[in-house]
Image (cartoon, rainbow, N blue to C red; front, side, top):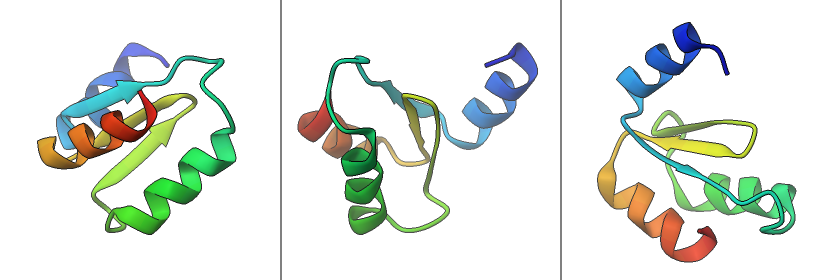
Length: 65
């Protein structure tokens, strides 16, 4: 991710978790996020998931990190 996109995303979604590449099925992770978080409160780029809310990032990390 280049610095410009990195800055823009982190400004809107200041809490992020980067998954270990060997963590598991990326599709299962995306399905979990879509089922458990409100659209617009998260996004992802590759293996990094960004959240607007600290609580959401912690909940995500407890399941996937």
